[in-house]
Length: 473
Image 1 (cartoon, rainbow, N blue to C red):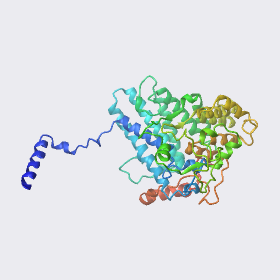
Image 2: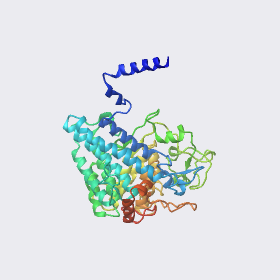
Image 3: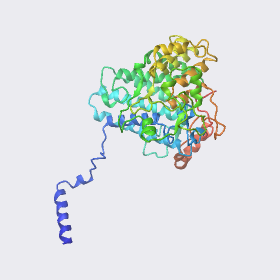
Image 4: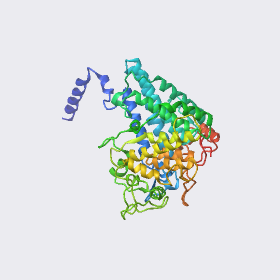
């Protein structure tokens, strides 16, 4: 009986497959050819997820800038980057999940799209996103693989000089801006940033160029001035221009804060006393938009770097823990802060530092849900008013920018390193001073050892205390 059953099954199998034996090798759930638009969308989402995530295996920038602090597990608030291989998570996400997908999309676009003008637009957009991704890598680590990166034939790529890479990224951005044609279409709904609107992409690219230019203000003043002045006429002019990745209200495409805090049921973070106390001292109207009230109905932050009771202190607000809360990649308020600084540095940009500063603070308050009246009252306070607030322009802009970049931990960390304000203090229990960079991925140390050693020596040591090329003071 067993022989008959086996023979019958064999006949069925062979009988049903003799016409197309090759189809047995096809996996419908894992196609061998992926459309360029799918790769582009996937890379955009992967970048947004990395920047918005509060997962301590990947993104601890809200902790480094003392916007949040931890409750039970305090390793990251005390600057232990290696317990969870945080640098490896950041490195792999940007190279493998972001840059590689954008690069493959660029290769496939000419095959997928018939209209040459549309091809140029889409290739330019993908390249702009690559520039953005490399910006995040280079300002995290310093020297990184670039000219030999993304090539499977070079599993041990050399590292390029960070400043040289940065100069090339600026050139690429100029080429991409020139290539964008507002008379042609692009990705449409597959573009998760601007829905394929080419004019918005032009404005975004120029605004990101402005941001890249000001980063060099202390280390390379001449280049910074030239880049900022060239970009300034074409940047964001209102919050309607903001570059934002929208999330949905139900999984799987939801805000990563919701995923990691609400969906998971974790109670790992509360507001840090550093930020909460500063905002209370300034009577900041955004406080209730950033945080929940504490156990006493007031606002209080946990002691930064220490163990804190989740029930006692203010927590990230319901606003930012909503599943559909968007990730802001670049905002009008940030652009106005840059222009205020550019005026102070005597760059040839229109307006005054006072007006740009007021625009920046007002835009931030309104972007978070505050009113024009809230902004006006806030700006009249002597401790906030640009003409009377204490300190240099770096201090005035730096403190308000730190608040304005709340929940954008990476950008807040970069601006703190560049402007040196606010003057954050590491907890006494910290392993190091506040990190100025991530150390390289442990995989690079073990697999790409020769190039890793060379890069580490070139930047002054693979340490969190090593200043990067832009961080002069």
